Amino acid sequence: MGTDITVRLVSSWDEHEIADLYRAGGWWKEEYRESETPLLIRGSFLFAVAVHETSGRAVGMGRVLSDGVSDGYIQDLVVLPSFRGTGVGKEIVQILVSRCIEVGISWIGLIAEPDTEEFYKPLGFSPMNGHVPLLYRGDF
Image (cartoon, rainbow, N blue to C red; front, side, top):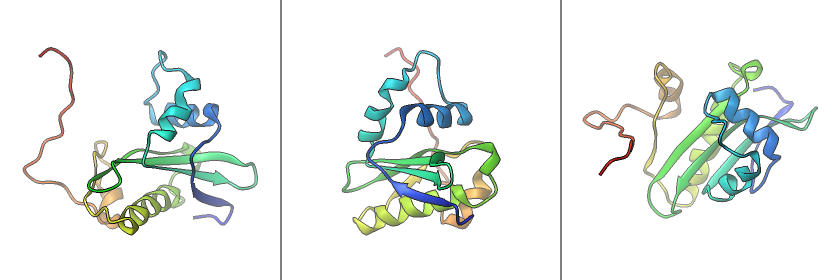
């Protein structure tokens, strides 16, 4: 990772920059409001931002959802396209995992996008054979 990038655990960040990162990941929906991104950050157990020190702008992010005691789920890992392949994503994951382990959370999971498993394997993740991720679509 370049020396001009620093990964920080934060409790707040510029809402427009966070929304831009969600857009870069393809996860932003037009009905979302940028003004609600501070709630998203505060509602996360951990929220990491990769900062380009020269510009002060966020170039990547990731977060952990957890109660802080047992399981942790890494979510929303994204790096701006111009910074991909530089080690930024790896550094974000390593900081999130390290902090979870420091506080005693050892079950750390994530749902990887298709064809990204090879990114996560060197970081200690492996497929959960026999498990299937599910998404609620409505209708009881």
